[in-house]
Length: 371
Image 1 (cartoon, rainbow, N blue to C red):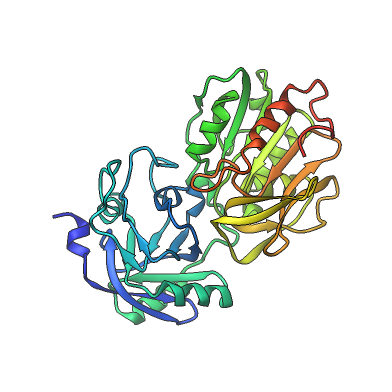
Image 2 (image 1 turned 30 degrees about the vertical axis):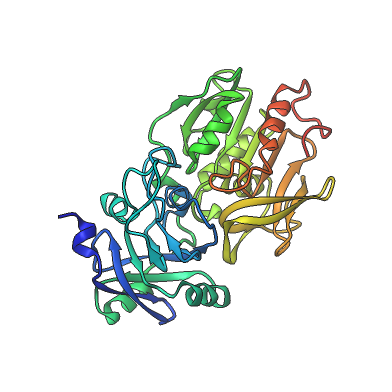
């Protein structure tokens, strides 16, 4: 009998670090205690892409949409080889998926990958609490409340932790067959990003710790800095590497890559109260005041005004967070959101074309390019 069926229907609790308790039922992998930093995601669909996004390493994902799992799991919708999140929280789990692409139901799939979850949770109450109190450590499972409360208090969370080391590729590999040559630093890269990059370039994906000197031993048209989990300030080796690459080759960063580029330029980052996690965040492109609806997944952001060498190109219309940067004197730009949008809207996919044009530019960095 699978873990899912052994665990299904068993009473479980979710306990936050501030002592707030939620009652539910266990699902997924059978565990007495699971811990992590709880965050909420507002997507209406795309739960498989969300769960397999390596950017959720160290976190427990609470879905605000009440009915999760109704179309099952598809072999075509992975964003990485497996889930890296610590757990999943849902209001109602669909145990009988209905979709011709589905190969397995969500609960069984979570159990297969060793990911615990809890269902029956009042996710509306949980979301409102996180919005008021901020993202925080939690514990959930079939253990008693006292045990879970102690585990939640002992959970470190993501502050100051290098989570990139646990999700990056251990070996170099190549994807795509485009005419340009791009090196992509894997800080937790998504399959949909590689799909977009592969249309414009042959992409060498390298471990996050790859030194700049090794990268520049062969001709390179551009460097891509991927998304990834956790606190950018903890990934000091990546910041140093990017600093060595600045001005040497065109650079494009997304999400964590945006934050790391800012840090390499001398900027500062900070933790948002509850992060941006969803597929409907409005972002204004300042050059023409066009509004893009974007997919986002990050808990940290770049401090406004801290990057003297770059102009802000995009801002979040919900809270004013810096969503894009472009260097004035060197060929480098970045965005906080996900232009590849898996899952999500495709409003910002033009950025991959702008990266291609930047790499093909004779000046390799004219301010007239892109943003």
